Length: 391
Image 1 (tube, rainbow, N blue to C red):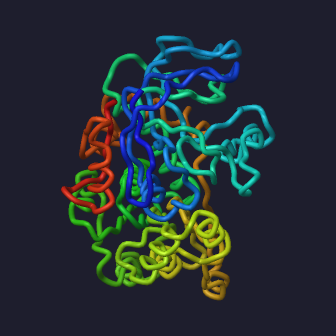
Image 2 (cartoon, rainbow, N blue to C red):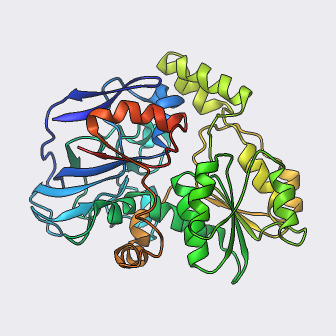
């Protein structure tokens, strides 16, 4: 089969690789019909290279048709249309029963002190082959796959793999009061959906991004927007009676664009031999923290910050005096996809499309075009916000 493989820093290629096969009774094989490129994939493309191995199949936002199931899989069958959550979880351990599937104790990657295995996402999360391919082996398919209706565009359901539940969790963790205000920093796919979900839930949403096309997309859904090239914290305070928003979602994470220092650090870490690069990532502060610092400055006293953007450093400095003095609540973490599906499947299946899932994709491409799409997405060219690959 064809699959998109990691080859090095800013280098991915489509290669012929062996077809996946059933390895465990709880496995399934899915023929991929759509697989999206996530902003988190750019971290593999840019800075997490020390945790990648040449030839790794990437991608963690897939859906498709079940081709084959293992002997222990009874919840899905061949021919079913399914979305595959990015985190691989068992459904029955202590953490899964608590609704923390991203911390699944059955699949935790203890070698790196990480939580549950993720599809296509480096040694840190298990080095399991991902879904930017023609076929995918799905571990723990007796629990993970989400059956969806046979009709309707893939894009109506595809984002249940990551984007929609991650954004929903981000807003739930932000927990604005009824009728309160929510600022969303970053208008990539997660920020776009977080802003729409916040508005759907009745909050005043103010979204911030430097890219005009991203702000325009949010505005189509009734979202107030700000250009982040100005003093964002002061603008947000001016718009909220001088106090700042009740809650802030940081949907940016460790992006290095626009930060010379972080950019140099990311480049240096990414070019180190793998053992040295891994050690640097595990012991250093390598993140650009502008968005998080802005959130801390902007949120009102007693407010909440929800972090959905991915950070990678272990020694990043935080202004704890300010955080303590302002009595800020901080919530974060990888999404527990399965916990939110009962809330979300009816919304994405609603013909009125209340979350605007059909207005998120900006580019459709074949699997063969994926390397060009990664470059375009990373450079924010051609209004690229969300790419869907069609194997």
